[in-house]
Image 1: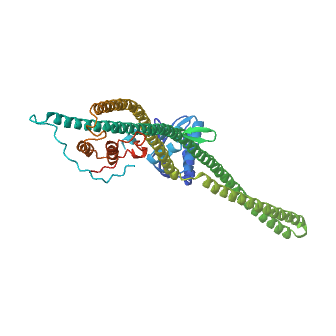
Image 2: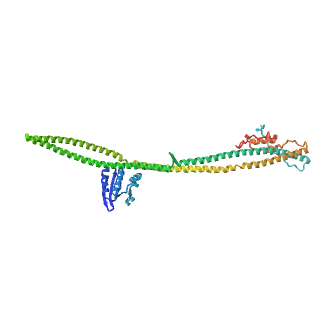
Image 3: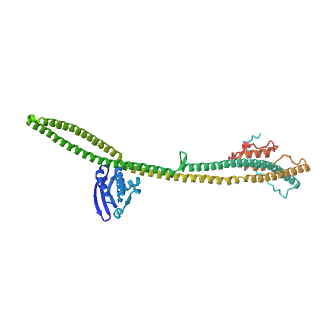
Length: 108
Length: 374
């Protein structure tokens, strides 16, 4: 998995790409640091280009949610693809996370 | 016993009743006509008796058939009602599942399965989350172990320098000769200290390696715990959802079909009730037939009384039991039911007493009778 980080007027946006699995936990630690270092406010994880998640990745997303809340921020998952959306529905994570869909995603 | 079933009866044409007006002997012609009237009257009397008995027998057949039909319809109606009850029981049974001490509807059962599946997946995710937290903790431990390992390496470097110091001290002691004995003692002590420190560093290095190994194994174990490919769960969940939806839909179809079957049975029961009521017409028919039989009997008695009076007034004019054979033949020729024709002939020819002329019950089948011709 690769990720890039962008600071926007509306908060941090981190874009993830590729398959997100256990072996990415070292790299995701940097994402966690970025999410918690920014203090309060809005953080976005853009999942539009993520095509696979295993349960370890879901666990890491849950940790990200915990850590962001602890840092008084709010985590938003943006534009998950069809399979990822079904995975969220299956695991009832769609009720735990704030999931955001942009106009580009709806058009796609 | 009548046993002339095979007797072929030749049907003659009845003699004409018109008597020419120019008959030279009018009283003789009138006497001939009177004889024929009397023979016709006797034939009618016997025919009335035969017809009354046939009507009585027919009425009995109708009554038996009506009672039998009524009972069969009654049985059919009761079966239809029982069928309604059974189908309603099947519908009630199909709509619930008995689990332990409670009855669950199919929707409740499918909801329960769904709930269990979500809980299982929730548990998997919680395990994954906690496992990943432990992985991150172990990563921190690994960093600390690496730092400790660096410290040990520094200790080994220092110890190496101490050993060099012991060697230098020993060299200086040799150079000072007798005055250097004190340095020799110091050099030995430093060497012993370096050896002891070296042993300790090796022990610590071994333990750090064991910790690193243990952390590595724990990391691998946590990876196995935390990592589950959820794709198969998604497919299983989708199939389960489809399966449960199919079960609910199929159950709804069954209920609809069974409801229709229950309705059809109820309609059948409702339809049969007026049929049973309608069969009561048999009582009315029996009354009508009884009236006809009564009228035939009265006519027969009247004919017999008139014939007897005529015989008394004109004794020897005609034979008492004579009947007009031609009209007798014509009377039976149109009767195609063999049994009926036999009985008619028996009555019309032999004029048996009532007890000998009883119609056997078994001859009154309702299958249309055996039909034959003269």
